Image 1 (cartoon, rainbow, N blue to C red):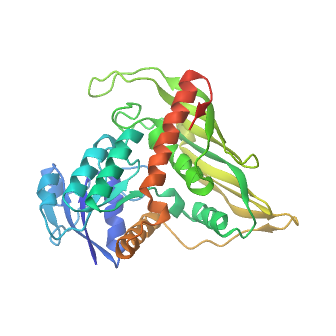
Image 2: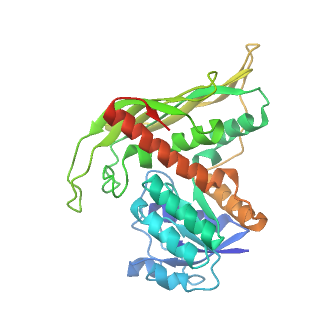
Length: 357
């Protein structure tokens, strides 16, 4: 049984908590929060954009710490699960690694690729694992697509188109602050950059056009540097057959809510999927496999809910620790490269030119 300490009792911490309740191979034995009410189990204030709202939880079987440093002194903990705001990820991960703990870090690994490199160096020095919880490859249609790309069942994967758009996320404080959350490219569209990197490898060049939030004053009084709000991106690879593009970001249309989807092209098939949450309803274009013969297959995916993908992440975390090899979907290197791609896209939008990766 892998024993876990959770730091960051907000929305993602709550989702991770629910996933641990289903796990038979990992046990949440401790958590750290500066909020005294949360240390007593009052998590009712937690809200997010999916899943259940927070509840009063039983903390009698967990040790509740006020600080990360206190929790890091606990010798029974094998893994620190980081669900803190993004700007705190790097220092927290490094501190945990230096204390001999493995790390599971909610995405993004860090706000900058240089910070990611610091984390990877600390992991190598400590001989501990850093695993990054990028949930998208665990979600049914995306997991199915990634498996086909790996097995080659329909031949070589030739390219694809990815979309991911939300209305203005007012419930996330300082969303457009590059020093705290990172804006759409780091917090939202990094999902697609990560999936592109995982399936196709590292592109040689990106070209992007987009709209920019030039500056705004955040809750901490910071004046933000320019942050891309919405972008269309072309990823260019050394293999000229591979054609990949993505689009998305934030729109100022509240009814838009959230949408994501893809069309993935193989030598002998095309995959399609899209999900949209509007102000009044959710609609899905279910996953389809379109064959060269004209036949349309509609794969039956495993039953799932809002917590299932996070439960699968935890299972991969345990397998990684037990085997000594980090599961591909949790790779810190792939997560680091996704941040670097986001940085290149940001430069391409601002500088209005193609950027070598």
